[in-house]
Image 1 (cartoon, rainbow, N blue to C red):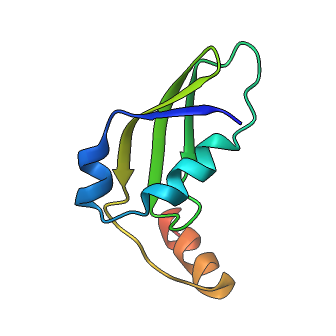
Image 2: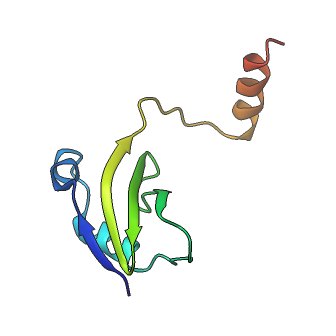
Length: 88
C-alpha cells in the first residue's frame, strides 16, 4: 500500500469527487522504478484526470483536470466522428 498525499484538496472539493475513492485508487497504484510522474483517469468518472508525482513510496496528487468537452457515442457515432475529423 502506498502512502498518498493530496496537495490539491481544494480541487477534490470543487469537483465534488469522492476523497476515499481517490485515496484507495492511488494507494493501490503499481509503482515502477524510474517512474517519477503519473497521469491516470479517475476510476469513478473518466472525465477527470489525476496528475501527480511519485517520491520514494509516496504518491503525491498534485492536480486534477476535468475534461472540457464530453460527447457520449456508440461505435457507429465514433466512426462518423473520426471520418468527419479527417475531412472526408
